[in-house]
Amino acid sequence: MYSVSRVRFSIIITSYNQREFIQDAVDSAISQRPAGAEIIVVDDGSTDGSQEVLKQYGGAIQLVCSQTNQGVCAARNSGAALARGEFLAFLDGDDAFVPWALHVYARIVQEMQPKMILGRMRRYEGQLPAVLPGDMPHDIRVVEYRDYLQKDRPFDNSASALVIDRASFDSVEGWSRDIFPMEDQDLTLRLGDCGRTIQVLSPPTTLYRSHADNITKKASPCVQGLHRIIHRNRAGCYPGGKRLSFARRAVIGGPILYWVNKARRAGHYREAWNLLMLGLPYILAAVIRRLTAILKGRQPCQTIEMGERVPAG
Image (tube, rainbow, N blue to C red; front, side, top):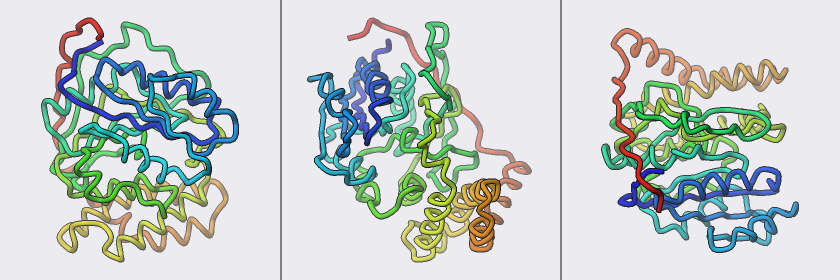
């Protein structure tokens, strides 16, 4: 592995009734150990035997077992409250890190001192993909933005792809407990002007597991989550005021268009129509930003060398 001990991370894993997947998530975090991370696992009141599985890890993780299910946002905040790291790396219990994930994040922190990192996800189904020695990347391709609201490339918003500066996370009081799903969209919007944001283009850093219970396979809750985000934007809950109004709309518009199409394909025609009508100004802003990027060019890519490998420990 790589030596990046100068950077301190806290990995926060949350799980609820994911006994089938949670070992992959925890094992992938433990594989990052040479990167100097602490691992906090919050089991949110599971009833499927997950807690017994997690207790077998002993001192390799800091385990918090809730007696009742509080919701994923409350669980993430509980883990963050215990964290000592300068940066918080979140991971859902049905996802996993690739072996080099924290080294990628650490190199970005060392070189660019961001407030937020947007990781790259690779989707898969079934068994966790095997990673061969030859798969280890040599370079990291990134894009730097002044802040998240200046993002000009698509990003699969997911808690498992977010790394956030602790002070910035605390400044917005963490995850909102009153919005799910789309809570990841809400958090990044509340962090929208926190400062330098780095988007990873390659290599992938997170493995996103596609399975029957993914919330993103359920169009109606996600549509309703976007309604709440639009309401919050109108209520002034996101930073930047009028100065950043267009930028916020452009960032929100992409997910609106995606979920309008997904709701329509799922046969939820009324929900798709209502979201389309409500979200037209946002979709228009997203289209204008996309056209501007085509005409003027996107923010340039940068390359960071992964660095030399040294013995683990």
